[in-house]
Length: 397
Image (cartoon, rainbow, N blue to C red; front, side, top):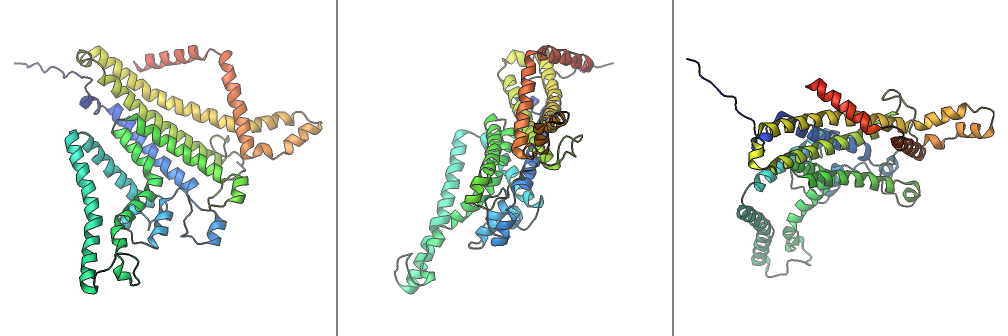
């Protein structure tokens, strides 16, 4: 006798949606892009200038995007409380990022787990942690002070000629941990916020992480700007003012420009994939209960998520191509000027270095973007995009 095994119906409840391969795929893609972004930022903005190293030493701290420099500088005067294998200060390159990344991952899952507990339990854990820190600071301080007072007589815990009669260093020992976490946080704060936002389903940490990266890039550009750099040398490695000839990305970009494009693309992937997961799940959570089990709503949700994957790939390709073309727009301008042979103006522009330098690239890129933006009044982009989207949906179905 045949038994009917009805197919289990799919629903739009949050525990079910979090197991969908599309949602997990977007979260994984966002996480990988964030880690690659950290590595690329460290490669470009994580070194001190050669002149600064020659005048000081390789272990001298400068405000570069590298956590090991600050920790090595701090370890000269204080013993580090966090193990070196976690800090990564004895490693080089990408290996120095592995320990802190594991620490950020552990903190993320602890944070997510604590957020699922009741508010009273969260308050109890918070009070236990604060009490533990206070006990760590006060109890050893009082204990050593009493022991030394018994051995050497009563004395104040500071201002004594003998070092063993000064005990404030014991009281402030937990602050050394905060300083170590501060040096870690200068680099890994956006990573921790991004992990919490991606896997904790919160848009605010994701947007905060993107803003942090943009602020770091802006501050580095400001402090290495020639008029400021000549007056205040903090040891940062200035980026080259010469972009160079195109040899990457179909010959449109130089290696230096291509590395900057990689940062912008990784930020785009991290932001788009991370926030899209949160937006889709927020939409599903706000649906009424009867809609969550309605198969028509389920089908529409699946179509939206699948379309998001296609749009993410298309957006990255289009943005990368347009950015590369805009950065190479100065070459097109020079090529046009070369056609105007015989005039003094064309010769001066053709031999000028300004168009080859960074701000020349920025100006030419701005002209290209302005040109593309003006085309929206001439080309029916919405109709074209709608036509492409309709055909993609038809092919997928």
